[in-house]
Length: 432
Ligand code: EPZ
Image (cartoon, rainbow, N blue to C red; front, side, top):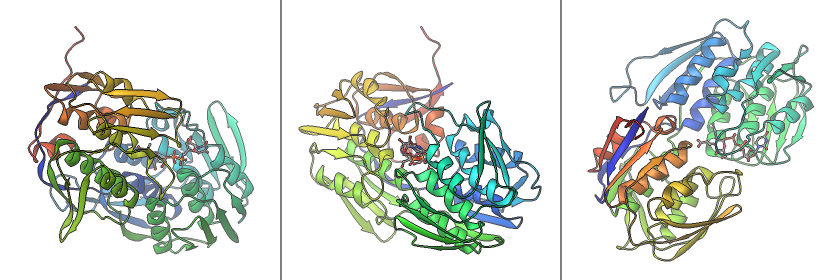
């Protein structure tokens, strides 16, 4: 297994190009199941999770091909054609679903288009049990017959799905996405109240409308969908990744550097900008992207609580915690979305961070410097918070199990090395 080796203490300077949003690309790819025509998706990131979704869709009879080369060579920003030619299959197998929880996003489209879906229960992951009860309750309100057998959800809608007025009991990104796709082909009108409002959901709704769906209320917490008989193909470009944007902004801040982030936007990370500005980070719009640097030479500790969009995103919690480890003063960081998303705390503590966890809150007391250490990545965002800490730490940091990182960050060591970081990928050392 690979590891990332970092020699810290170098301020990052230069430009980083932000990729397409992983959490928009995955549901958009699942939407290809809703039509037998070709869905062309552009600006796709080259990530392990995207490859996993390609494999899963392949199992479900979707032909996936690259349409020409990626604009910048390699694979970054590539264009894929997805065509659901063979519409017989309806099973998403455990060995793929266990690798990527977002596989559950094929449930809604399969049920809507093929009338049947057999999807392995995703199982938990490092950050929590990750149930899908909200998805299932809402689909059953649309007439789906659901059986749980041998770890699989077996859903049927032999007479098609019927529009319903669904009120989600809690805000769920995935459930909102599954129900949007299911409702697009249902009979009659569906209303989704207490819907999640993440920009990735707006991206999915815009793409579905480009495919002929009739969705209103995009960007609000009440979505109204008029079901149609069929959807057609479309060409759609994925929005930039707001979490990758926030992550590299934190990298500039923690190293005292000065970065320009290209191919991204400010308007969908207001809550992150607000928190970083309070911590003493200057973020300004430039003609070709956004510029991030420290406003002065000291970061200030601030309190942060994760919330559903437009609040501070849970996917940025680990990264802001790494930043607060070297800020002046204390920060109370509260995680309200997932029940176990502090796996980075013991690893940061091994670098000399001063963090005390009380239930869903962590009290971070800033220290003058972190010290490099051998660390273990546990989940996607925890991994990158350890890389950020390593960039600022004195000495050498080795982050193991970087396969977590590769699920959500494209060529992270190349992008950081190009801005002056001493960072490389290496074979993990055999345990001494
Ligand atoms: C999406 O996960 C993202 N993944 C996550 O990003 C992100 O952290 C999360 O939304 C919150 O923003 C993708 O988009 C592929 P939820 P999702 O349903 O849809 C509970 C990353 O790092 N819940 O909004 O699974 C759930 O356990 C990943 O890129 C139920 O109880 O999140 C959690 O506590 C990590 N029952 C909360 O709701 C359900 O049926 C929010 O989950 C569904 C969810």
